[in-house]
Length: 78
Image (cartoon, rainbow, N blue to C red; front, side, top):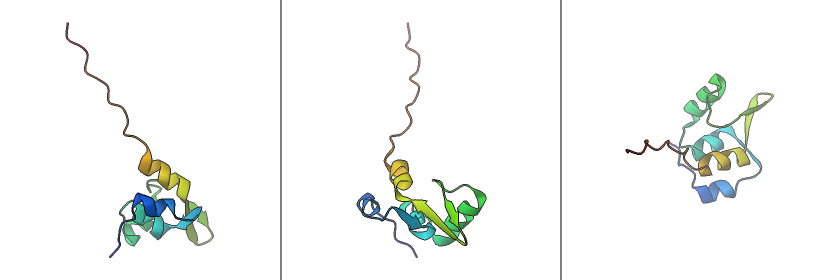
C-alpha cells in the first residue's frame, strides 16, 4: 500500500525522482503509475533513462499547484 505525499514532502524531494515516488504525489500506486507511463498518460512528463523512469520534481509541483482552469461565466441576462 502506498502513502500519498503531501505538498510539503514534494517540495523536499530532489530535482528528479523515480516513477513510484512521483506516483505517490498523485496518489497513484506503483502498478497504475507504470501503466500510465507506458501509455503516455502519466499526469506529468516522464523521462525514460535506460530501463528506469524519472520525473522532474518541478513538473510535479507545477501540476499540483496550478490553479483550476477558469470557467466561462454565463452570459449576463439583460
